[in-house]
Length: 547
Image (cartoon, rainbow, N blue to C red; front, side, top):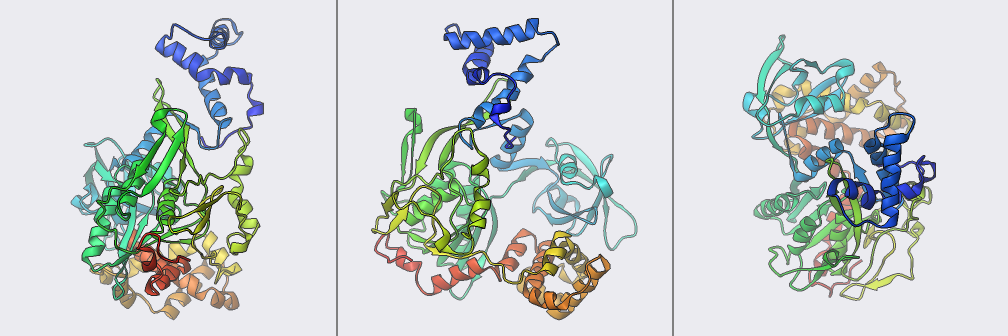
């Protein structure tokens, strides 16, 4: 539903759309007795179409189809959800759904279990990482039927319902049957938590979204890391497109001293005008903080990064964030559909609105902004970033920051294309790295069953040269001939991705992130700056020099 057609091509006159919410839905469902002349006109048009138009028309469907066009004429983030889309979106943001409790990948037209969620229904009946789900009930899940959409619809279902899974396990010649009773499955917001450097006491957390339970997950992760000796934190918000405002306020409060602005909002109605302040109750006010962002970090991610940056509380590292400074309110309509209507703009503590420019009703340029940044070289060179110097603001410590288009990091780290070659692009696009990694994980399943860390994993899987040569042979068998000049150029990249995918099959998503981060230039830069004391300089809340 995010794809918006050109509003000029709507068949019904735009005037019909402009009065839709107040005139038709409110008039029809709430029986409003006092309506404006424009609203009365719209109701008359709707009645005429329903009663006198030559063909039979479902007026409700016709009007509902206009809603997306109406919202598209407002701003890029006011959107419409069908009842089905609303249900799926709410499941994701509410932090749980009902299902069997596995994460999976589709490899060679097979549904492969890569993580059995601890305490979930699948774990209780004995499913294991590496199992292939061949069927769920009457639904076959192999070949053309092995699609993401089909698997989600089949494995998820109402709490308490039972489904029989037919499973192929590597050590069994026969299919195994598991009767699984679906139950509530938590949807995690914190995807990875581990000690990035035990000697230096640096803990790492990757937060993928801001759902209803994000703060609780985040706080427990901080406590876990602190118990393991963490003295500072790297908080990775790259790719995090945002979510609930209250969750990010609670997160920022953990790091800020009393009476610091976290975020403010300003809208037409009084309830949409507010200032969120820290209350001094945070348990991690003296822990150095480093925040990682990129061009896909948006909304709540930018609020968190802005609160840390404007209060001179830590370092922000990476690339300029997305630039979404609009606040939406979700309003459910009588037919169980909903709209997310922009009701306010949010502002960082220094007073800057980081919403990037947009033209009302013309979202094409807005949607293409990320591509424009890439083409202008912004991902690779900080000097290519066009800052609006007229929108100058100051942090509490007097450092200059700018509004008008995302959070500019304190330390810019260009996108890493080291190791890219035509060979790497070819095998990556064909999914061969994932497929071969699964084969390796299957082959070594008996010796990896007790593995708990990536260090242990690297000791039992093939050495780098053996792993690479095995992959090159596999790729050649699947249509990508060996080209050793390019293979050697991409050697480190291919090996890191192979081992990361093997780690995912053995250790789950946390293992994948840990392995990938070993060669991640942004993470490595963050660790370097923390060791140099740059993040600690900011803990004083404005007295540090920053970057």
